[in-house]
Length: 131
Image (cartoon, rainbow, N blue to C red; front, side, top):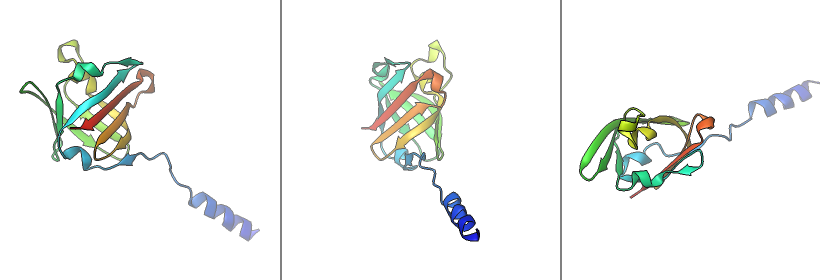
């Protein structure tokens, strides 16, 4: 009976969380990025971000640049979330306000950042690709 209990304990204590996304937390701070996918509820709105480049500073600053004009914001990364704040979500701040969210990480690598909205009902997907 003790052997069975010991074996059961080993199986329980050795379980892994395979749902952890692949993350390189320093990758965003290298170089500039562009939006190569932004979709909301199946509508591809990627073209709204044509001409924008994004820089993610190691100090938590985020800068979106288009035609020499900068929009400053903040960003942070954790084990499962990519938090981005480029201003309020409003018609006056489109399209950048659409990116303000607590994104769930799909993957973060040296050349690509793939995110999805943490609110599944909005069905938003965002991909940054390194320039």
